[in-house]
Image 1 (cartoon, rainbow, N blue to C red):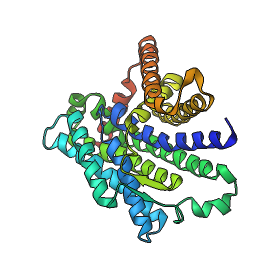
Image 2: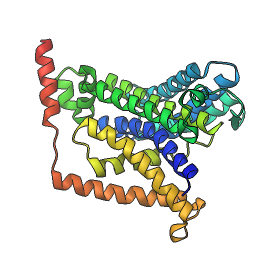
Image 3: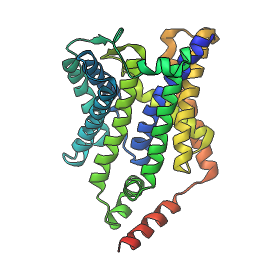
Length: 310
């Protein structure tokens, strides 16, 4: 691999680490198997791209893409909480609907951002790292979102959200509104995914209606690889694992494709992804069975906060 390929792999890994953080919130914290990700990722890209080509400031356009992703997650949560639709089916329905919505937003299958000012444009001269400029900026964003998730899950609302996903009955006994926690968690989760889609479109110079295909698998792969390497006993370790897992996953995929290991070609990407996820799941389960980890600290902290409020 040359330097350009390495920087591209790291850049993609940092972008998808935001997806992994969103998947961590929905799958691990809320226990919500959310497939909205495959629709909210291109939604963030589409909303940002349309805003930019209409003269909106790239930073504001990025916030618009993030908010659009959050609204997609809120819709999935609403279908599950208010309309009592199975969480998996709610995510699928939203994902399917978002394909048409994304086409409506863009007005065509794809939008090119070449020649347009993006969020990366002002940093190309300020940072002056050449091909590594995007990587540096994305690393800052990824770390900022990692610390945001760490901080949020340590707050009273974050503890309630974690409790709601871990044991809804016990959380309800502690006066936690599980429905509201689900709506909030899904909104934040897909907001992170929308942010990833927004930055992806700006870094690649194009927003495409099909760019979200397989996003959930990539996010899960990054999440599980991170858990296998670092574990998920603590929130800080789990979120760090999302970042490391995403970068390693994209780096190994790029290395395998560029080196032609075992005759792997570009069309084999989904097959390689499925194999990597399967192996990572097996290793993660084996590690969890050996450690026998539980989460009594979460309940102690939630009970302590409830007593303090009382």
